[in-house]
Amino acid sequence: MFIYSLIGLFIYGVPRIILIKKKQLKIYWLREIILSLFVAYLSGLLSQTIMPDFTFGVDSLTRELYFWFNFDNINANINLIPFKSITEYLYTTNSAVDDWGAISSLNLLANLMLFLPLGIFAPLLWIKLRSFKSILLLGIGFVTTIEFIQYFIGRSSDIDDIILNSLSILIGFSIFRLLQLGYDRYNQKTRSTNLATDKS
Image (cartoon, rainbow, N blue to C red):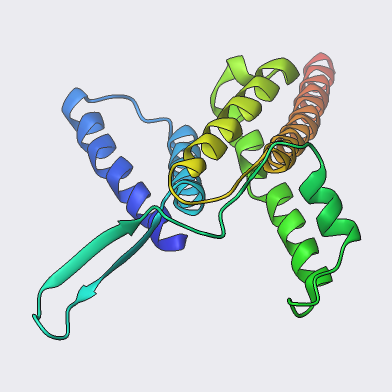
């Protein structure tokens, strides 16, 4: 994931730097840093969600380089029943898998954490995404698209992933709103202090 984040950052960063220099754009460093972090995060996220399995190497007999994608997976499945997978993770056991409880908890936690930064980055970068309705629509639309793509690349598609990932984005958005509230109160307090100092 980290490698893909670096690749995405490089693909974004080089043209961005060229564009800024060519058009002599004014640089807002904080926004540029946040945008770069967002691109790195999004590149890593997409590498884990919509990139199909692939194999590459050198054939030991012909010495030729090979590279191919694998779109077939006999273990892939589709679940369209809400909360079915979540219930199985929480209340069922699997004797064929060691420490199933820990694996189930980790999978649920990963689904709740993976999209959380999107709920922070999106409203931070775009004012139109600073309402609950807009971020909810973005979350559902984005994760549904990912699950739809996964169906065609040999990966499982699960409506529970849509539920958990959308909830993850809403948790991130809640964190953003709390940070925004704290920032606004700090600015208000600072303005009040400065105003009182000026009057004195």
